[in-house]
Image 1 (cartoon, one colour):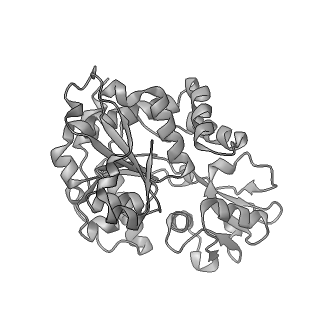
Image 2: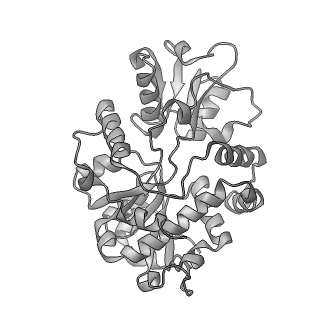
Length: 337
């Protein structure tokens, strides 16, 4: 069972976090003492995260690495970080939350411990006939979601690195990733920044040349993993085992052998199963290899994120690597079979 909480809910009742999905407790072939402390892994309940959680359970990877874990869903983009910062969860393994560094800078007792998805699974879509390249965007309306949210900041960085004046582009908040995409379908915007999950949609949109963010922004770590300072201190072995399990999950996910298991997991996670969308995600994972078995990030990776967010105005100052990140767990996990 996966326990879902909203932001006020977890702040009111941390004790309820124990009612989650316990996976593990079996003898571990690789990490003998990993089950010494139950690990509270928090996840946003979006479709992609739900698919990964289902696939993790199907493959029995927590059992393989001896992880005694409870998975908790925290609603809202900031929900997982809020849960960890408040001491109600230990680690978030996959998060597209783009305020991690700024929240750490404000004093949150959290560290980035590695990468979730390293490559940015976003692209720019438009209706055919008008916008062919990024250079055609000035003077147009682009749907990106909230101001300085993930889609907006990703798009701003893309234009910045391509030398296009973002002041000449009209950005509009049309809500979520999917809502931004459908705003273009419905004629409410000329283009959008949205997920690659729409690549196989049959509604007439086309991708804009130069708009594949995984190609245009190769140093941009799209999703980070982060943990509380307390968990890093008190649950080191459990974190190592969990990160090894996720590394194995990502390695499997990017292999041709994952097709049937991935589709089964996505059917479990999505009420109205969308086969074209599932195929787009699976193809992207297999071809572009956006994940890595080794989840560790280096100082240059963190420095790029800091420069990016400072340049965009969402981060005030750059801090030393050790003040915002701790890769000891990821490096230890990468050394396991």
